[in-house]
Image (cartoon, rainbow, N blue to C red):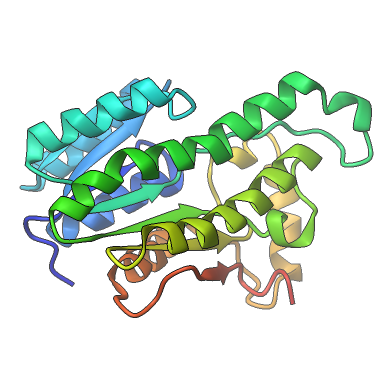
Length: 246
């Protein structure tokens, strides 16, 4: 896979799956805009790491839940690198709330999770679409979750938000065809900072999975790159969960 002269935006690109994906894209030749909202240090470190390896990268701040900031990010990236051809909608947040604690799923929690996890992905896709179309087409990968498939997760609003991401993927695939392909990578448990403070729980989960291992961010990044590359696929949900949902 050689993406020399291709330009990618990775939202939430400074940490976890986002960082692994930013590095993987750069290794394949893409110029990478490492988006962040609050993790400025990590995003700058990721961009510097890419540049130190001979690649092209810039850290770009934008809160994906704010349409005007997303549009400004797309404009800046296009001005910096000349075009936008790839988008990885990775930015996401959660709240850890017991599934049966309905009172804790406040309106504030619902708004926050839906704004970032669903509307943010739509805003980013909408902002980059004109640039992709002008450059001859593009590819988008959204990050879903098995929570959106099973209905179980870190909280009820999170599971519902990820189910919405799965639906958004199919709708965007139809809305942006034939120029832009839109697919969704659906991870299970991944060893990222989301498990901070719950490492023992993660260790107990691993032996229960068919592959008896928790996925690493690099596992997900490789699948994201493959989905971005596949020219005969759109509107698909691709699960990578070490057999967690079987």
